[in-house]
Image 1 (tube, rainbow, N blue to C red):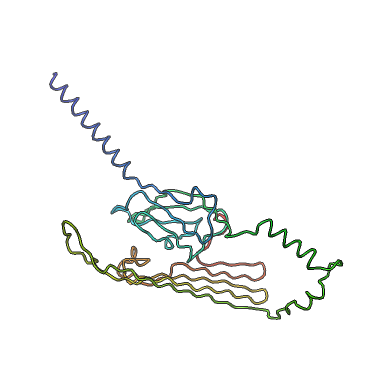
Image 2: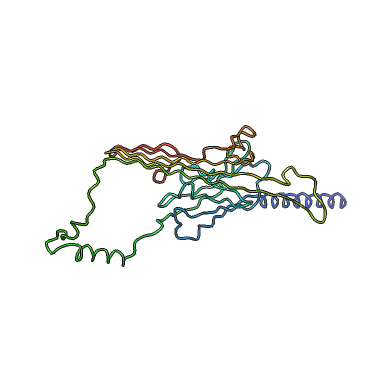
Length: 273
């Protein structure tokens, strides 16, 4: 009886140790996320923000998805090991208070929310109180006569009014990069041959923005493209595989307004939605 009792106690200890080890292993593999802007009061629209994950993705995990409010901005983040950097040159951060949400997407297309961070974006520069006071003094006392009308010197030097009722502007941009590894060596033990031991890849980022105004009608468009000669770095390689295009549309926005009626199509955020 004593022998049976001792064997039973030993089995119970082994089972408890196994369960503790399993729970410890499972908790250590949990993916956590931090951000470099959470300690800042605000960031600028063109400032690069970063999201840092605690470990590499596992085989069952497909990618990291990031939303600002309800807009999917995952394609604007470039991954560098455990860091995901936002490219604010392609699409500036939205002004005001927003919420950045990070999701983990599994290969079975299951989504898991990892973290939410408040994101406050302020204008790049605001006029100081001193500049505003100087401008007020010049306008009120130096630029007007006692009767409140502009003096003769101002009337003669004032530019003629623009009689045009509309305007159209286009702003294209193109950035081309080259990343290469001309040689590779290992020491002290050589590794097996690698297909990407030496490589030279071209990368491309392009955008086309327009602004059209005519009478009460106005429209603004923005199209951003990204590409790479290495197909595995294509934007939709994770979903299309080898059929993914090397140059693809990263984001777009079309906004039209007639009077007080406004319509938007594409990647945009409205208020907190």
